[in-house]
Structures are given as C-alpha cells and as structure tokens.
Image: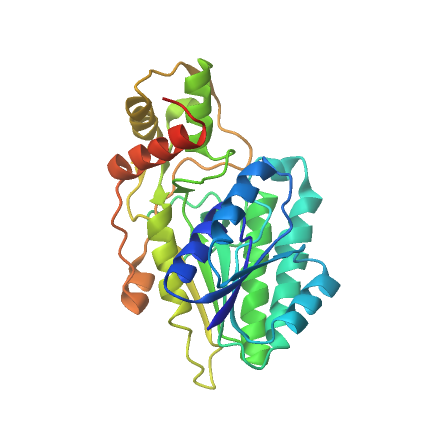
Amino acid sequence: MTILVTGAAGFIGYHTCLRLLERGEKVVGVDCLSPYYDVRLKETRLERLRQFPGFVFVKADIADRAAMEEAARLYPDITAYINLAAQAGVRHSLTAPYDYTHSNIEGHLVMLEMARANPKCRHFVYASSSSVYGSNTKLPFSVDDRVDTPISLYAASKRAGELMSHSYSHLFRIPTTGLRFFTVYGPWGRPDMAAYLFAVAIMAGEPIKVFNNGDMSRDFTYIDDIVSGVVGVLDNPPADNGVTPPYHLYNIGNNNSEKLMDFIGLVEESLGRKATYDFHPMQPGDVKETYADISAIQKDVGFAPTTPISVGVPRFIEWFKLYHKIS
C-alpha cells in the first residue's frame, strides 16, 4: 500500500510516517516546511525518514492545487491519505488568521479533491482537534457532543474540515475518518508545545508562563499512543452501506485528565531542576479542562493508550536533552 502523508516533517506526521515505514509501507511525504517554528527540526525529522527506501518526499503546500495534482501524477499508486498538514496553535490564530483558512480549509479541500479524483482511494484520514469542543463543560468530551460554538478560529477551521469531509463522504462515497487529537506530546515535539516550552525555560533559568494561575487540566496523550490510533484507524476504513456516508469521527486521547501543575512537576523532576512560575489569567481561545471519551475508537479499532504522563514526560525529556546536547 502506498500512503500519502501530509505534514510529514511535522511532529505527528513524522512519527506516523516512521511507523508506516517500519511496517513496510511505501510513504509519499508532503510538507511545505513552513517557518512557523525552527525548520531545522523539520529537516532533521526528514533526514531520518529518508533512511527508508520506501519514503519519498514532496516539498509542497497542500493548498497549491497544481503542486498536489503533480504529486498525484507522479505517484499514481497512492491508495490512502493521511492529512496531518495544518496550521496549528490556538494563540497564533489570534494574530495570523489567514494562515488557518489557507492551510486548514483551502488545503483540506485540495486534499479531499485529490482523494475524489483517485479511484483507488480506500481511505482518507485527517487530523482534527479537541479544540472543536470549545467551552464545553460536560466531561469527558464525547464525539456526540455539540460542537457549534468554537472559541478560536483554529477550532473553527478544524470543525470546518470535519464538515467538509462529511459532505465528500456523502456526495462521493469517499471513506473519511477524522481524529480529534488531545494535547499530544513526546520526542520530536513542536517547540511551541507546553512540555517543550517548559523545558526550554527551566533550562535557561527563566520563569515559565502558567495560564489561569495553574488551574487547568489536560488529557495529555503520548505520541506513540496517538500514532497507534492513527494507524489503527487507517486500517479500518468506514464501510459504505449505501445509506449513511462512509464517515467516522473519533477522539484520540489518553482518557485521563491530568492537572497542569502535576505535568509541570514531572518536567521539573525529569530535568532535575525547579521552575519559577509566571502566572497569567486564562488566555483568549483557551479552555480550562479537556478530557477525551475514547469509547468509540476503543470499540471500533481496539485503541488503548498505554503511556501515562509519569512515563511519557521522562521519555520526552530524555529526547530533549539528547537533541539539545544537554548533559
């Protein structure tokens, strides 16, 4: 099977490509190497993927229709898509809104059209986000909950992707599955993510920014568990019964909401240093707590996260020290 993975040089994209390559799949990785964060980290991830003979890389923006049509022409044996390319980050969406409509809406549409034009397409898997739940206070968050009140443009753009995918499944019978990721962390993570930001600040002897005065909880999900969910879903496309659209939507989380201050404590412990805290009020677009109901993906594909933060955080810090050459 040849699988096109967008966002291949990104955090989740890199790990997904790696898992697929390790099990012998052919992977066409697509990424525009956006400078949203240090491109050197993305290039290093790609260097590791290029060690596999089954990997080819296409440098392209998924919103560039001509570039993606050329990729389809060059690699006609693609049978599945995993669209992980996106402009991430709630806070960035407050200052750069057009980045989100470009990548998360226009780019997602181009990818759906690519799948539509491919008669071999057996499954279109894509990244959504727990942010779509907005200020929902009912816990845990269920895929059956209403999600029509997003509180950030980022969340709105991810919800738009879900709705667009449903329409393509309905109209063109493309099997699509959306994955609402919950606070992913781990080795090779993005520098704008919490664990990375905390580690950098602590090692520099600078205070870490803690929002809502630390009264926050997150369903922190380790990257290996996330990838197990992505690949498990890929292998189980929704069936087309001719009546309802071949469309699935799942939460992927650790099924456990952890206090932010406990998470920070593990970062401190793993680094062997104490942090100083710079407390701030809740930020616009942010939420106090997230918690994933994963019963649907457990039932359908057997997804079962195995990595608590007591294991995952030390693994991340071990990688962080190696990558930054910290003894």
